[in-house]
Image 1: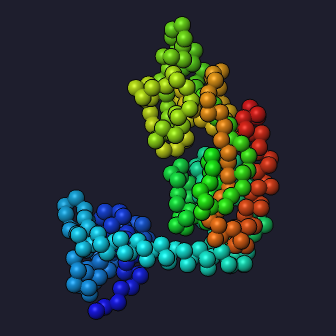
Image 2: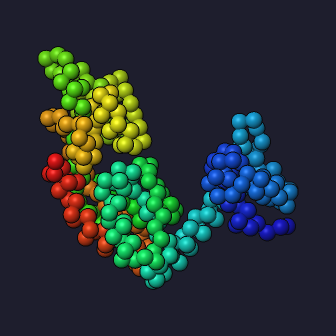
Image 3: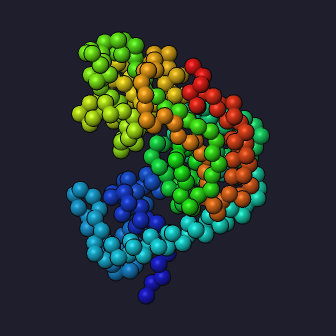
Length: 294
């Protein structure tokens, strides 16, 4: 019986998660032929067919599905070990993986990250910009700066400030709305998954939403092009010279902005240095994030 190598399982997991060799190769940072070679070698060594090779991609066999379940358990154990090792590192050098949204990075955090680099030039920042919720518990990131109502038990975090929201549109679009109650005729621009429209207004129904996006950046561009009204963080809406805030009551007016990390990492020197720095640095932006600066 051949022993299973963790490095081989990573290739199996990548193909299972991505559904194709090319996508798995991109996620692993290797070329297509390397993934194919490692996968073929794994199946040959263990006399096990892991995938059905279909025209639409790679689909797990029954045996492959059982292997995947075991591989995921191994991955969880390896990640937990990485957490503990990383959390005990005390050097102010090396890599720190940070995730936030594109808007926060562009409008708020850019100058702060530059200042952090001046203080800690040996810490290399890896920045992931996405509005998708990353799984910090599996080390997709070491530190996240994100809006949240509360944190799961696995995370440690600090509330940085309140982040206000409002409804914004191009003046020409707003003035062109018709009827006794003009807002009732408006079309809307929203984030995917309904997270931006949950508590905005009873005026909004699904058929009135003309654009959904996974980031606020496309929404602001659509609003500036008079496509509809957008529900945006005030620091984004107020920062546009082409939009004005609509005077209307919204139920979900603000949320908390957090800096967060996994509990195993909160005593890492790099994480501690960054969290302490950003907690102080972002005080300059409190009014802007809370919607008080126009």
